Length: 257
Image (tube, rainbow, N blue to C red; front, side, top):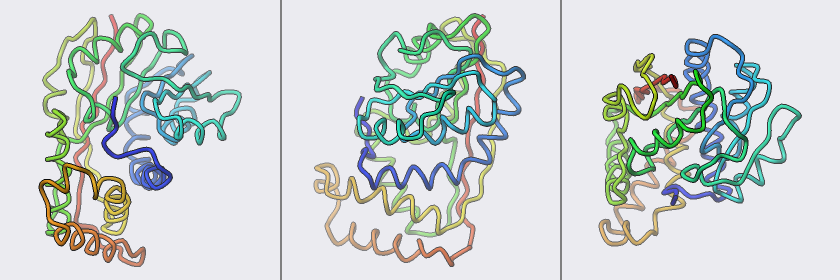
């Protein structure tokens, strides 16, 4: 699986900001969705491990395992391992998972980077215990007013489409009711208003990986990319507390029969 946004130190910094931004809606989602403490929870596409520790802390899992195919991200995550949290270098599209059948599998903003969503979810279902839960968070929509944000999102949307992926993958996922032995137990869109400075920081850091990619060089002039980069950098000032960009996050709960 090729991750469009890279696995460099800069990418890890972006994921740290993302983790801070989405901790609140993810925490609320987990508390709403899970009644019992899981024996084993698996965080697929864990990156440097922020969501893995969040799962462990919120759900008080007996053990939580993070899986990622980036050697760099896993090396960073392993520095934070505890008796209750561990990390594995593993491609989440390959079965079986190294941690064994789970009571809960979780992913956030991962399926937007994967193809053949139905077959992927069906595969993950085989890694759940009977009655186990699959929890998914993906982007349903993004509302914004500033042109610099609109320009950035338009480019990212096009890059994902070029790889046969989708930025707004929430709506098609919501169309999956019964899939691979799983039944949809809950589905909602949770709104998250984000500071302009936080959104601009995530976007600016993201650009550092892909701004000179073949796709960008073929479709956008250097002047366009420079202008976008400068605009995002200007908005990333932490003193800027304006909030006019909002994410709608589709939160889905599936249960294995």
